[in-house]
Amino acid sequence: MGHSVVNYTLTMLSDLHRALKKPVRERHWVMVVDQRKCIGCNSCTVACRAENVVPPGVVYIIVMEEEVGTYPNVRRRFTTRPCMQCQNPPCTKVCPVHATWKRADGVTIVDYKQCIGCRYCMAACPYGARTFDFGDFYTKDTPEFQPYESTHSYEIGNKWARKGQRSPIHNVRKCHFCLHRVHKGMLPACVATCLGRALYFGDLNDPKSLVSRMAVHYKGYRLKEDLGTEPSVYYLS
Image 1 (cartoon, rainbow, N blue to C red):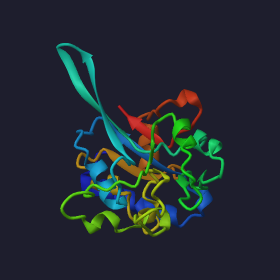
Image 2 (cartoon, rainbow, N blue to C red):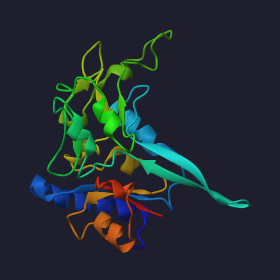
Image 3 (cartoon, rainbow, N blue to C red):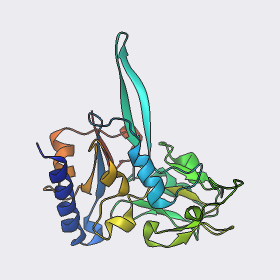
């Protein structure tokens, strides 16, 4: 497993392109987070914000920080938390208009045209991985509103512009593993930007893929597995 950063990236891209040749139902997109390498730089959060034109109050991926150990032998531990893309997602079951569902490849998405903003799914998510778009802008009420805040976002394969009362304003939003990039053979923005090379992405159903080998070789664990949500994000600690 002793790859350089370049080799890791090339391996993931090779795995990704191989997976895209398979039918959607035969893929299972997952992310592996190596907590031993995460330095808490938040570059993943910044990259995600830029890629998906994320407004104030909306976040797709965060880095949680905690202190572990007993004084004086203490250290900081970072836990990167995107959407867990659960295989048994509690969020989809409570949506009264079926605006959120799990795709055949394991990624849960939200249909902004269908979402009514009731936020039931936010309450149901045990990971706090969903947030609400209240329609705020960073440069609102400043001397000059910046056009980049209303530029098009291509998430989930659609072209959205946050203007006025149009969707996704007043909808629930969440991480979707950058499917708009993945479908074009590119890695999710957070994975491609991670400075510590702590994030990995690929097809778990491919035993030759890097993520599959890492999850098995290093005995990856998942958050709140006891809830039966079957998360698609594995952690190495």
